[in-house]
Image (cartoon, rainbow, N blue to C red; front, side, top):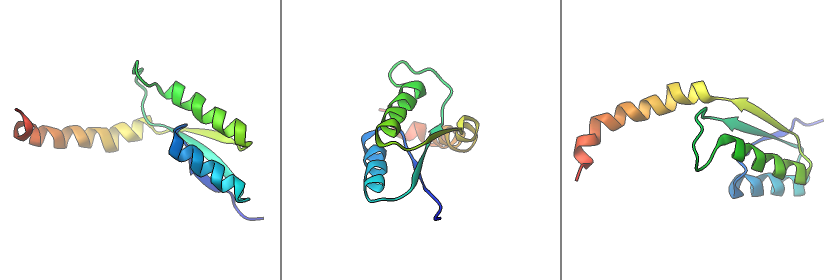
Length: 94
């Protein structure tokens, strides 16, 4: 038996169509929802994204797992962004 293809799914159109297309082509897939933020943004929360991803996975009948990368995202992506942004902030002020 071949190993399943792991699809990162956000609940958005691109990842949803990718998962659907792979499933329709007969591939064995599993979807992973990566939680990259712990904050509660009013405009778009990770809970809403997860619900969208879950709806897609339920619809196409594939398992969905959640992996929490909030700490890794903060440490390796967001902190770097803040550091680099502070270096050039004075260049883009109008």
